[in-house]
Length: 190
Image 1: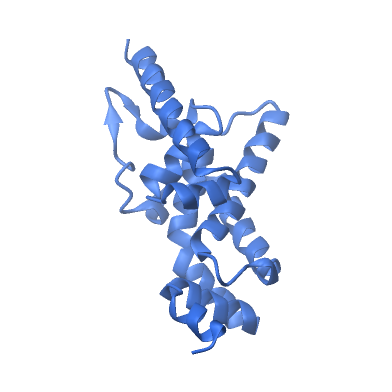
Image 2: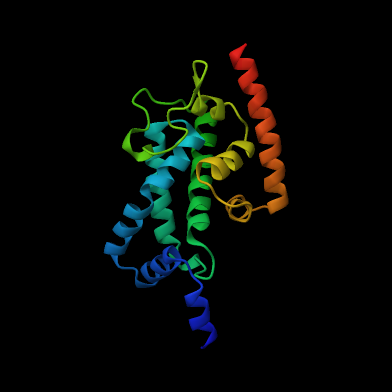
């Protein structure tokens, strides 16, 4: 077995599909990419921004950026963290633009809709405040680390790839993020 064949047999189904799609560049494959990953990407960017309408824009931007930069994707690496890195960066840019305008991203009244169904945090309420509202009060990078770990269920190594840091730093972010989140919850509930 050649090295190329050996690497291909170790790839996850997502990696194989995304590698094939990205090599072909067929526009129909772009639709498959969106269909396969629209819910997880939308869930991630909504959790980061707290703004449903803005999340729709950010998710769309994520897929366009991923498609345009598909040649930069290393087929030997997991696909989902690569895509989530693009989404997290786009969400961070969205938040920065809102803050530069003096606006804070707020959860829209219509909520996340079907793009977030099945998220175990979707309906979480502590007292009269939602988990999303608590997360929105948490600073970066803690918010992103907590979302990637506990909402998206990524490993420390995958989170490190998304956040461009080390797994040890991710553990630090998670530890401190949980502490800060507990403090925020305590303040809000008092």
